[in-house]
Image (cartoon, rainbow, N blue to C red; front, side, top):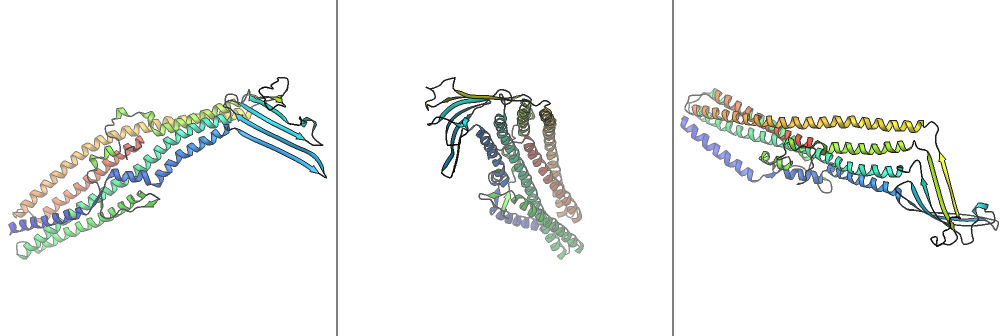
Length: 471
C-alpha cells in the first residue's frame, strides 16, 4: 500500500506541475529595466525634476535681460486756453555693458511759451551721444553682473539637482519592485507547499480508508493543509499591497496612472541583470570619484553663488563715483559733427561715513559661506562612509546568499529522505511536516535575504546618485 501511495504522490505532483505550466503561459513578465523606463519617462516627479532645468534656464534669461538695450520715450504737453505752455519730447536709447559702463544716445525737442530756460533746444531738436560709468561701486561687479553669474551657477546646479531627484524616485521605485518580487515569490512558495500538503493529505486519507493509517494521521495532514492555506492567503494579501504600491510609480503619457494586473509578474532572474540596469556593473570602490557626486556638485555651485554675493557686498564698501559725458549736436550725423567743447556732463560722489550696513552685509555673507563649508565637509564624509558601508554590506550578502542556498539544499535533501523513509513505513507524518516546515522557513529566509541584497544594490545606486542613461 505504501508503494501505491508513492505512485499516487508522483501522479498528482505531475498533474499539479502541468497546471502550473499552463498558468505560466498566460502571464506577462514585467522586467525591472522596462519598469524603471516607465518611471523615468512618465512619473510626475521625474517630469517635475526636468522642470528644474527649465527654471534654471529661465532665471539665466531673466538675469541676462539686465543687459538688454532699452528705448525710452518721454513726451509731455500742456495746453490751456489756447496757450501752448510746453511740448517736450525726449527719446533715449541705452546700451548697458558688462562692466559699470552704459552707452546712451538721445534726441530732445522742446517748444512752448513757458519752457524752463534749461530746456531750450534748437528748433530741429538736439542730439546727444555719451557714456556713463561707475568708477567706484559697480565698476568690477554690480547687481546685473552678479545676477548673471549666479544664474549661470544656478543653471548648473539645477542639472545636478535634477539628477538627485530622478535618482531618488528611481530608488524608491526599485524598492517597490523588490518588495513586489519578494511577495510574489513567497506566494509561489506557499502555493507549491500547499499543493504538496494536499497531495500528502490525499494519500494519507486513502491509506486510512484501507486501514494502513490511523484517522489521527488524516487530521494531522488536514491541519497541515490548513496551515499552508493560511500562509498562502496571508502572502496573497501582502502581494496585493505590494502590487498597489508598485502601481503608484506607474504612469502613462498625459499623466494617466496604471494599475498592475494579476497576470503581470516580476522578473525572477533579476539578480543577473540588476547591475546592468542600475549601471553599477564593474564599478569598484576605487573608481568612485567623490567630487563627481551630484550632491557635492550642487553644494559647490551654491558656494560659488554665495562667493559672488560676498564680492558684491564687499564692493559696497567702495564710494559711489558715477560720471557721465554726453556730446551735443544739432546734426543727426553725430560722428561727423563731434566737438569736444559742446557737451553735457557731470559726476556724483557718495560715501557713508560709518558703513555699518555695508560691513554688516559683508559679515553675513561670510557667515553664510562658512555655514555652507561645514555642510559640504559633512556631506562629503557622509557620502564617502555610506558608499564604503554599502560595498562592505554587498560583500557580506554574497556570503550570506551562498550559505542560505546551501541550507535550503540541505533541508530539501532531508525532506526528500524523510519522504522516502515514510514511503517505506519507517517515518511519520509528524517528521515530514517538521522537515517541511524547516524547509519553508529557510526558503522564506532566502527570499527575504534576496530582497535585502537587491535593496543594498539599490542603496548603492542611490548613494552614488547616478542617473540612468540607458533606459
